[in-house]
Image (cartoon, rainbow, N blue to C red; front, side, top):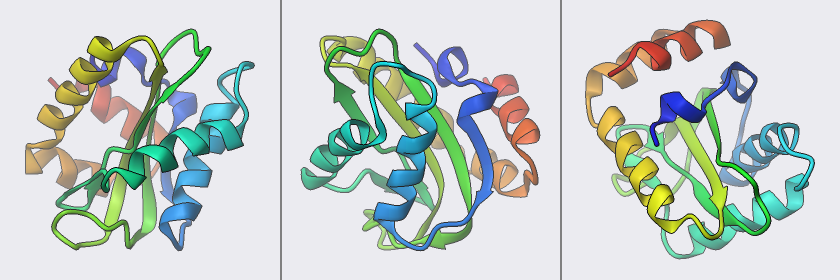
Length: 150
């Protein structure tokens, strides 16, 4: 599954105010919780924090892909957002992060989870995509950019 298949406009935000890693993860979880009747922000946040304990999901170049497996989730949810200012996220290159692609997947979908993460990492391995994302000034432009990306 690709980001384009699961990302919705409702799960896309541009220039979100954030001042810390925890704050941005809470913002992401609030957006995701609005998309599901099954989970609240705190259970989603717990899945992300558990994953972050294993190592930061900041992959470098100002990009992070926080992700978590969630019990009793019926379908995958993707969140894409940019922040007004980059935040410290303990990324592998020690640089702050301003592009967040978050993925919540059902607990029993390990292979789908890995394939989706791989497709996201491949898409964002091109610096051109990150540059274009940083130029977006509203969520519609950001969403459209991802939908048109190959």
